[in-house]
Image (cartoon, rainbow, N blue to C red):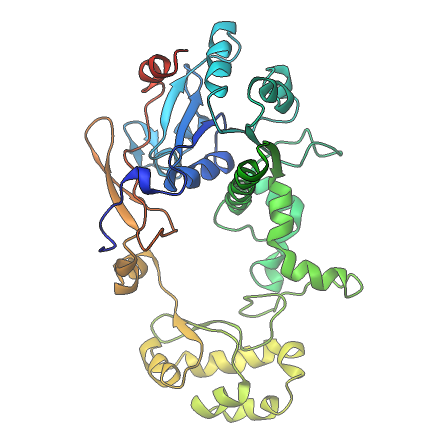
Length: 391
């Protein structure tokens, strides 16, 4: 079946699962988005007076019907049920819905969910087989518990900012909400594992993670070195740094018309292919490739900046050197490689406008799932859900 074709929703692995999602912002909604992509039905619980705060979390000045593009990107395919959780009648509707659900997801600050009476013990008393997932900023114990669980702040506390940029740059945050995204991905993995357990043993589970745990795991590669090497701090290269733990030539280099990325490559091969005599002494001393990486990168840079990226790719790619042109979004989205993936889908919003949004990065039996509809309006599906589940 061609990649562009869609499969029936009931054919997807999580078809038939009902997810009740009380989360907002990014981490929780990212987890439920992935479950939705794989066939689960996600009912998003929103406050009647404004809904998910991400509706107003603007990535730019681009809005869709007065709401942020981010909200539409991360909530496509979901349904919205508007409930005031401080209202006893609405809370009872939620509990009735939860009694018929498979997954319950929340990312309130620690303590809030207990005050609402919607903590794991309370939900389990309503539905013993529920898979309950909690995402916090910094876990449920310790001195950081009350701090705001926000992506940039989690990056700041985790040490990860000292891995980006070059040595003189100071701390450099990622240009993406990586703590939220990885916490969401970890949550989705935990939910899927708990669903497997439920299928085998008939019991639900409480899955917990946090932004800071996600950032700790994200750094497992370099932290393993730190923890087993006497606590030696990572040292970014002073020039063209790309990875604190890898030796030259690993990095990005300016060419006459752009930039070229070169990954792990023996310096002797580069010395021959690029005709750089100054690299020959280093080629015979692999121990110098890390210790003297700044000097090596300067030599490479001086050579590469005199010719175009295409010129160097023609030389290096035919010799199977690991390298690539550094693309911008225009290059990337316009490339035949990206087009072949069929990663963009067209959806229509509630006002009839057309949206271009990313698709699921996972293929099932060779087919990439598509969302059935765009992100919902606040409470768009309330009447239908209340009638269907007898709330």
